Length: 221
Image (cartoon, rainbow, N blue to C red; front, side, top):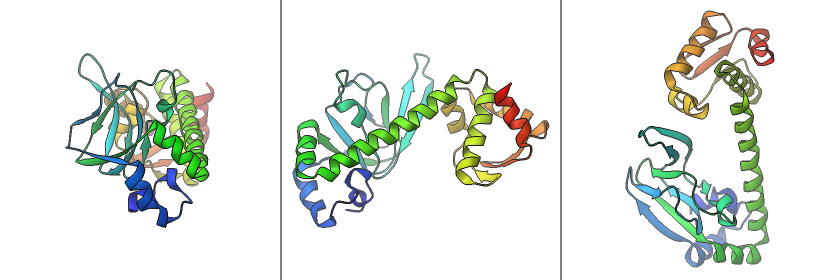
């Protein structure tokens, strides 16, 4: 039950309850690598919990290009923001990045869980709050009108989290570019220009901020 033990939805629930919860409320389903977990437009009837593997939340454009919004791993939850929404169709495509197993809890069973375990309701509200904060940060980043401002904001926010001018961003260039809704070559050019200007240095996903004033001025100008 490692996946339940590490799932935020079940935080502070006695481990002795996990077997009962799994048998009564959770329906498990397996997906092969690269298969579809949910199509854009599918109705969300349940919340999903990743038991094993990795899934990717994507937008697929008519050209076939794919924008990755988020990757979810073991114990991560999805669908909670849609389940109680009047418009509860998935706005994105969900794909299995590798062989995975998903546990589903339908709406009525979730309401029963809330009644039987008030802590789970509290955890659910915390999950919703956490995701709202993340969404607000993403909206703030996308509201910046130039790519260099988005990059500067991302690096400064990561610096604040890490507490050091040298840090690993923990994602590939492709993932960084998708997060900023730009093409990878455009991001690479912007990073190279910042390095050329003596603002930052980097190797792979390891970055160092050299000139904080110049980096902050990009955001202010």
